[in-house]
Image 1 (tube, one colour):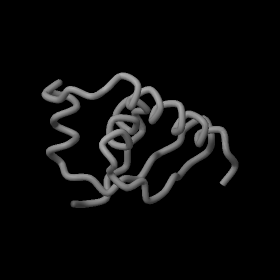
Image 2 (cartoon, rainbow, N blue to C red):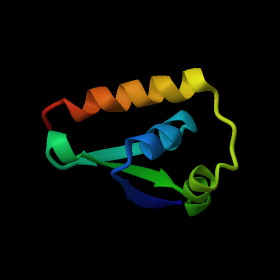
Image 3 (cartoon, rainbow, N blue to C red):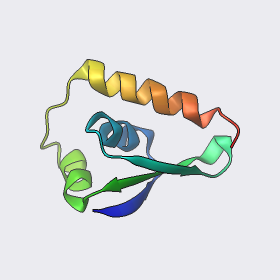
Amino acid sequence: MKEVKVSDLGLAAYLKAHAYPLVGIEGPPSRRLFLFEAPEDAILAYYADRDQTSARTLFAAWRDLRGLTMQAF
């Protein structure tokens, strides 16, 4: 797995919902970048719509990451 920078909150929530490690957050609150340890296949699966994820799990991950965007680092 390699470190990937993600600006898309939907993709970041997908990676978090699949338990890929969030290793950092960069940028100002209005333009956060989430850094994950994730394989390229996971990102391709998200964009190709090849995976089924529980809506509750995905929304919980989205809510957690959205909260982190407002935090001062």
